[in-house]
Amino acid sequence: MKKLRVEKLVEIIGSDFYTGVPDSQLKALCNYLMNTYGIDPKHHMIGANEGNCTALAAGYHLATGKVPVVYLQNSGEGNIINPVASLLNDKVYGIPVVFIVGWRGEPGTYDEPQHIYQGEVTVRLLDDMNIKTFVIRKKSSDDEVAAAMEGFKRDLAQGRDAAFIICKDAISYEGNVNYNNDNLMTREEIIQHIVRVSGEDPIVSTTGKASRELFEIRTANGQSHKYDFLTVGSMGHSSSIALGVAVNKPGTKIWCIDGDGSILMHMGSMAVLGVYAPKNMIHVVINNGAHETVGGMPTVASKIKIAEIAKACGYPYTVTIDNFRDLDRELEEAKERKNLSFLEVQCAIGARGNLGRPTTTAQENKENFINYLKRI
Image 1: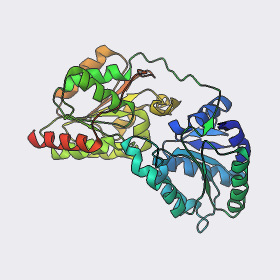
Image 2: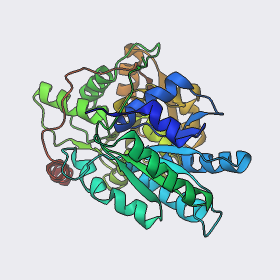
Image 3: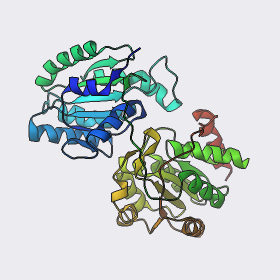
């Protein structure tokens, strides 16, 4: 069955400004935008989170009078609720936006546990926000999508919003993009070094490939998974989870393995961490400047000084690391330090092609971690 080509979808929508947070379900669109525009503030911007993108889109409309597009995974719907309801809505400013939403966890389609409930409520949340929807499936024709857009235009003209919901494998693009950087250390090797030094200390790891690699490293080492809380969803919140653990386990060293896309999504958590500054916590941010888990599109993290931001937020110790010798030294010193530590580790883009997923359920992971924390 012929899939809807991204080029045709873009033509049907007719916008010249896209902003969003990358999603693997939307990889075809993301690659098209990168090949067509790259990162260009006039036409394509990757935001820190989906609410940020919604506000960017509003600014574009205010400046141009034209309709922008915001793309996101459905897990990002929570981040758009506030700006949609209190900024875009036609009872407030009436700012029209077209959303393109990747439908992870679509009912009847296998997906990871963090996507199951989100998939069930995807359309309902959009309906509750008074956003008109059309689902693009593998069998959707160009004419059907064009007709849906014609219907959307009437709502958009009245300051209301609309959304195309993209099912798995529903859109296609023949072009490809190679994402890389000049860093030498791989994330999996970095996590191996963290595991060696952390020993039996609890670890909270961020969503995506970092948690998958941590799980496989424990398996390869013959170690228990009870030491780790794998934050398989809830992007941007792993450091806050670790803070909640650290303040309630003051006699135990708590590690957080974080990513650049994650800390950008909710950077305010760094300010909270810096002020409370638990002396028993180590915050490691593995920075490859990319949303690698969902395809490799860039973040802005390679162009900012994350360790200096952490220092300004009040972290007592911050450092940036780009080689294994320094990494091992800094990890050992952080483990012994009686203060909050922030380690930014510069990382290459890439992961093993055969990288697996956790074989325990999220509930099993939680219970094993809770039981371990009770005993230490």
